[in-house]
Length: 128
Image 1 (cartoon, rainbow, N blue to C red):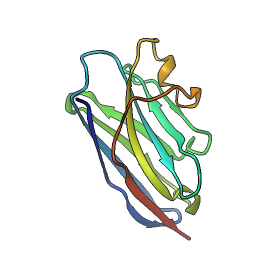
Image 2: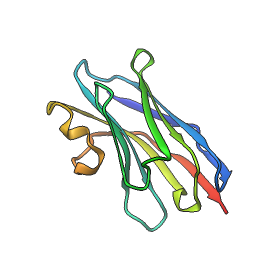
Image 3: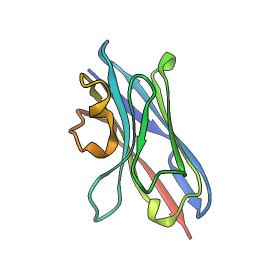
Image 4: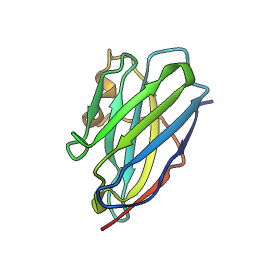
């Protein structure tokens, strides 16, 4: 059973930085997509960043140039470095995983494919 546990959320001022972590366990021995999503109150969930087994990363438009996704395969940990945070980045951030039998196509965060496994989320609050 896949388990994803996020950490690293918190409250920062506009322009600040946070680093989120996602500890993964129970992942199948196959190529896996890992990703970050977020949801603000009253808004739909949106893709932040996705990364495939070969380290190819994609980002939502709002994340480009500010956020960086990385994975430590040896420790089954996914990271999201967020810089220059703005109040509109406030929300709950979720780690997600899915099998990739598409050569990375399913991992592209803005392709909108369904992701199977989800963490509980970590709250990020950015004040102006």
